[in-house]
Image (tube, rainbow, N blue to C red):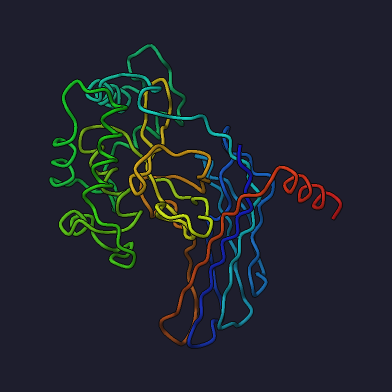
Length: 319
């Protein structure tokens, strides 16, 4: 088990005063069986006139706010204390169903609400499996993505080894280049140029899996900040993105194609959806006479000891 202090600071600077700002933030970590959120709150400056929190039907935690004080700088900072205890996952430890058999089960869920394997998924599970199998704006139908999947998967191959191979292939053949794309860069451009960042690699993998009839979701979160001198992990010190794939008998299994592996205790989940647009960390509308803005974001996911965790939680109770 690992314990973390998470700080995510987002700053918008505007050339002219903003009279009113409406914001929606998905910056509070999800509560799951493997992720305990001890504390989490959002600080907004200037202080909002109105704010409220909401948990959507999938369990993503949203915060809305309305700032009415005129401002040229808007700062949104989330603070969280989280413990993660995630079982070790490897291809060999997962159910060994063939990927094409799983695709048939996904089709059965979409058409009849049950996979036909004797299990009875809940309505929410049916909705998630179905929506995860359909194309979305940022992970659309793509001949290139389908070819990538077909060139990696072997008929009858266990889904576990097939998705591990696809993750490894994306990691190996796509160049990670910070600043080479934006969230608006089309999937086809990423597939053609062979470069991008974590959200691009997640969308590529999702589109490839969906092209074969499998169900996959986009996951937004954080990866433990590397200690000084440690290299190799990509996506630290920023929001990170990876993929969750539906496995009959195992639920949603998470893989990170940017770093080529199943996720472990170093990852903290913010939210999940069909693609980035479902889980954007911060979005909103501003009313101003000016145009344009500057944006910066800083993330720190810092490991803390069990003693420090206890001290922080005890201090919060006394306060």
